[in-house]
Length: 324
Ligand SMILES: Nc1nc2c(ncn2[C@@H]2O[C@H](COP(=O)(O)OP(=O)(O)OP(=O)(O)O)[C@@H](O)[C@H]2O)c(=O)[nH]1
Ligand SMILES: [Zn+2]
Image 1 (tube, rainbow, N blue to C red):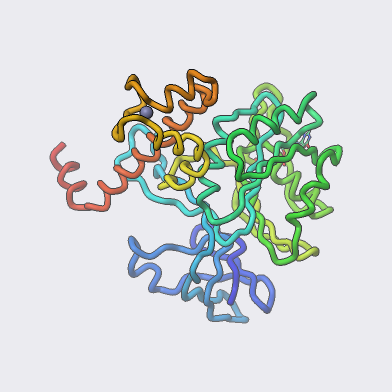
Image 2: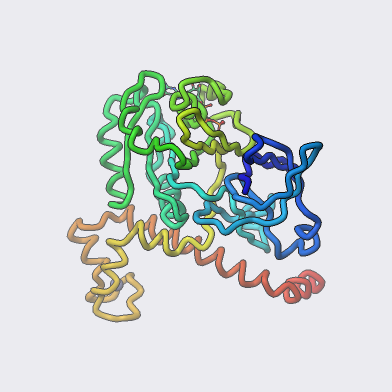
């Protein structure tokens, strides 16, 4: 068995018992183009090893965890007709969600990441980076903890070493950690700090808007000398929700519990009397911002679901196109 460490279009790098080697896909992958999934970084695969050139990937083994997002195929979300699931990485134990403590901090975005991560099959851990650029990191930790009880949250600085010790509990040989977050949040810097050497390239962020430069251009799986396996990913620009209903319900379990307490079973949680959501907001048990974030994420998730059902009926789609 081999493990995919890098994907560049249709060329793969895999780690097997002979070391890292190049591989291509067996013809059957192309035969069923629309139904057969391609391997992603982190996948375990069955492979015919070839010491003289490209080895041949024959089969993808069952994935124990996946991180996926909606694939808008290069269109703006509002314009697409077809939405597909795009698996980004597979088979990780921990998912490090990185977000920086400079003026780019955004609770809404972190909530979105948590919802997707909570249904990935891996354990989500939120890491607030660049604590050295912030006066009160702990207040941000508290804010993020309020999103969900099911996640660990830490503030760290890879520059000063602040808080880094807290991450030791996840550094077990044989475990796979995937790093996700926007460009410039410090994924590669943290990977280097954990590795104890420069294995990833780091570039300065643009000073004026704190935005990263997308230095990391592709996903990469690296085994550290400690035996910990790390997957660094390029900065994600927009994380669309893909069938994340379970993850959203986990993240907002407090709200889901309220639904059961509404007077009417089909309560729309707007103006009904006896609506438990409204009562919780009035009594300051639930913040209006949290309620709005929930509505936004679950609407978006529903929208993606409808579009994907629609495109599964390929014929219907063609008709509509021709009719235009
Ligand atoms: N002050 C401070 N700066 C940091 C810290 N960690 C990273 N940086 C800086 O943030 C910038 C971006 O870091 P990267 O590690 O390249 O970020 P990235 O998330 O890998 O970015 P992409 O590869 O574009 O996705 C660099 O200038 C780093 O020096 C930190 O703990 N404190
Ligand atoms: Zn209600």
